[in-house]
Amino acid sequence: MPIIVAVDGDRSEEILVTEGEKLAKAFDLELQVVHVMNRDSFRDLEEQSVEDTGKTISLDDIRSMAREIASAAISDAGVDATAVGLVGDPANEVVKYAKNHATPYLVIGGKKRSAVGKALFGSTTQSILLNSDIPVVTVMGK
Image (cartoon, rainbow, N blue to C red; front, side, top):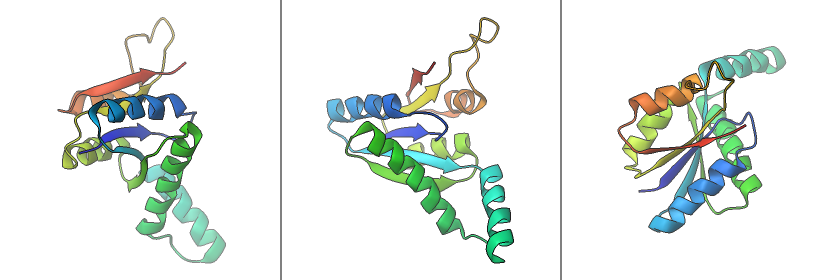
């Protein structure tokens, strides 16, 4: 039963991973950092691979790439954690993974919005919040 931190790879996730580590230490649990490669990213990689090599890219290779993004977030934060790479819709995969691993807390990032959008989270963040039965810790970025 790990604490799970979901990272998107688009910005510095050090604060997310650090918050996840605090929870993991407080509950004496393993920390896992998860990145989900979405279908658009997968398609882009697939097209590039076919153009470059004439071969398609395997799902295992895509998962490995996603795991590398999670691993980079762990390295940036300087913590001890397990990197996990998944492929699919980020919100759905994160919620499913957290549920399957009986995590007590899921840590995700949110973005601060302008005055008009203050009440709104990003679509992935909002989808996780609405679809998760697990308590979600949302760390707001800039």
